[in-house]
Length: 77
Image (tube, rainbow, N blue to C red):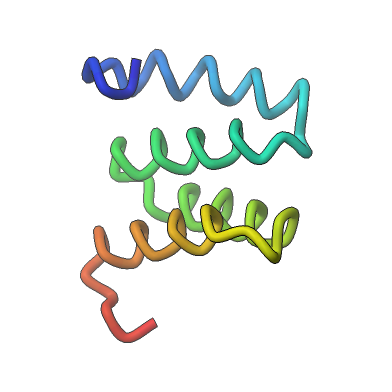
């Protein structure tokens, strides 16, 4: 859905997925991406930080957070 440009629909679905499985990293990662694509950078940042806290040894949380900062043009964070 995200790759097909259906950001709003994907976001709604992913919000339900994360509500049902809040410790599933894949859902959090995709939700952060949907939020970022919707230009809801504050929510995307919050979700990415949740993912970093959940999986501190994995790279995808840091990558999601970096994408948010890039979208905001906050290159020094």
